[in-house]
Length: 87
Image 1 (cartoon, rainbow, N blue to C red):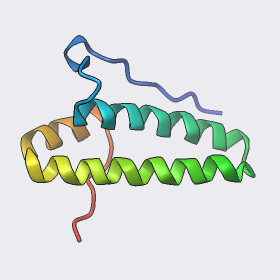
Image 2: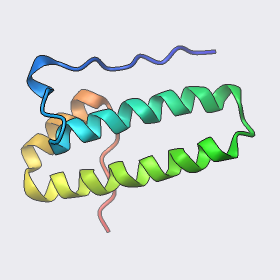
Image 3: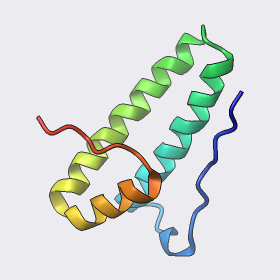
């Protein structure tokens, strides 16, 4: 069993309504649910919740990449997540 590292909130990201903070919060939830699902493989309700959170984060990342590309690149670098595919 691997232990996932959860990212701590820096003092500059205290604006809970900002897109960056919401993406950060969803990323922590995704990591927590992923580690839960490694133990409980048949927890289908949590799988559904994970898919919903992934979709929300994907939409916010798409919005951020359109509005501010520099912040987008910096944020995905900090959170160590992959860049979203452009349709």
